[in-house]
Length: 52
Image (cartoon, rainbow, N blue to C red; front, side, top):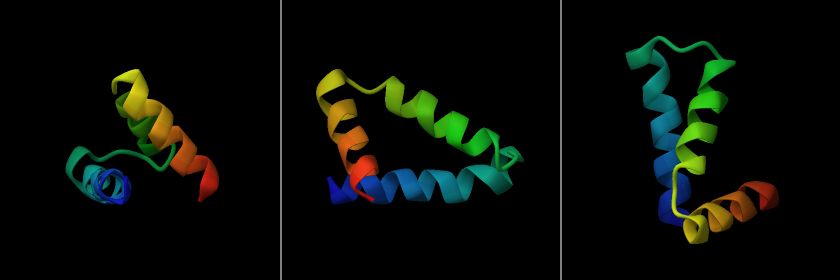
């Protein structure tokens, strides 16, 4: 799961300059991405997010 957390952070850091997203849109993008994951993986990601 640490790898997935790393990938989400990498996505967040690269999306802003490439897609010209505002600070408000980055969490929206990540939320949309996480919600599109299979339920078993989404639940683990959400649990990791709550722990950090």
